[in-house]
Length: 189
Ligand SMILES: C[S@@+](CC[C@H](N)C(=O)[O-])C[C@H]1O[C@@H](n2cnc3c(N)ncnc32)[C@H](O)[C@@H]1O
Image 1 (tube, helix red, strand yellow):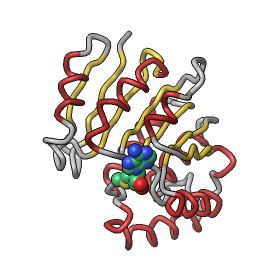
Image 2 (image 1 turned 180 degrees about the horizontal axis):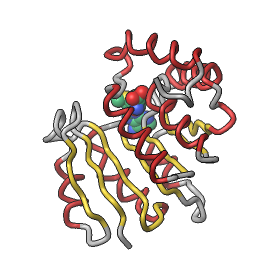
Image 3 (image 1 turned 90 degrees about the vertical axis):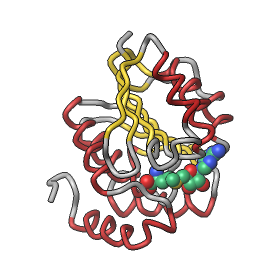
């Protein structure tokens, strides 16, 4: 297993995987991919849209924390982000995680202009993915990575997002054949 995770964190992840379908969590292979990506790229400022119970956030925040970084994560469902809060606490990353409660588009619109990130992971309302992309774009540094889950499992719902990122001159985009399909784009300028 991965050395950054405490024994408790490893147990929490295994426990959360038992209710993965109830909380719409990403797959372990996708989580591992994102974790390794953040570590290898040395990213320090991450933003997630769609916290749920914190499963993906545990992976992201553990990688970011080991790089000396932080994670901001957005969720509108109080019951879910309360559980996430407890899970970050148990896994030892609550000191680097900020949960931003509310409607994702409203929260993103309210971000300060100087809120800058090098990594984004979108996993909330699939039809709104294009809006999240447009709202996150000014906050993502050149060289940073934008990712979005479920682009194969929810192809129709994310089509406007796929068209927007494919035609955007600032991004180089591919779809990775991970479970559900992960959209992966580097902001090149
Ligand atoms: C697929 S789940 C996220 C799973 C999480 N990323 C994980 O892998 O552990 C999507 C989450 O986004 C939240 N969500 C959906 N639409 C939203 C919106 N418009 N604003 C904020 N949160 C939203 C849902 O309540 C749900 O918890």
